[in-house]
Image (cartoon, rainbow, N blue to C red; front, side, top):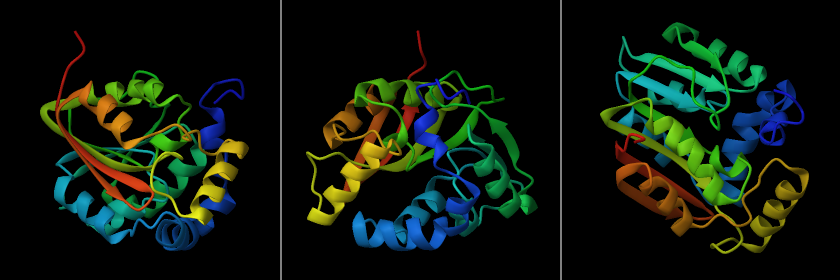
Length: 221
């Protein structure tokens, strides 16, 4: 991705070093101690909604798909603009023979759909704001889902939502550095951008984060 691309900052921090410590630090410590969003319920969301053909946008290390243990024959597509992420997650999930796509969710997706399910898990807070602009990512995913397809995931919310004092400090530091761009993101705003592209939307607040499920994609036009 070109350094001048608006999406560059949100994905640039995913270096081999960060990915090597991602599971214990980000999922084990940050999610639980800072954002107060335990990981087991997120894994259960994967187990519940992951379909026969699944698109994972921003797969990280592949942790969630591995722990969800999808049925044999499940077709997995991993999509991310960062080659480090794709290399790490595809190695971890090699037994599932995933399809790898290097692309930006803020642009039309170069994938062969339609998919039964898609995950956008802890990605939205990294996309460039304002929050209304992130509707582009939701719309692009909805466009490649089956008529009864499901999008699920989670995101860290901005300063208007319920953060502890340490969480607010971390949030502002991540936004200053450019890893996050979500100071103005709210639960109501999340629901709005999901409802623009899906008929049925559920948003659950968990600590500093929101977990969401959206079904019935509205096709553009």
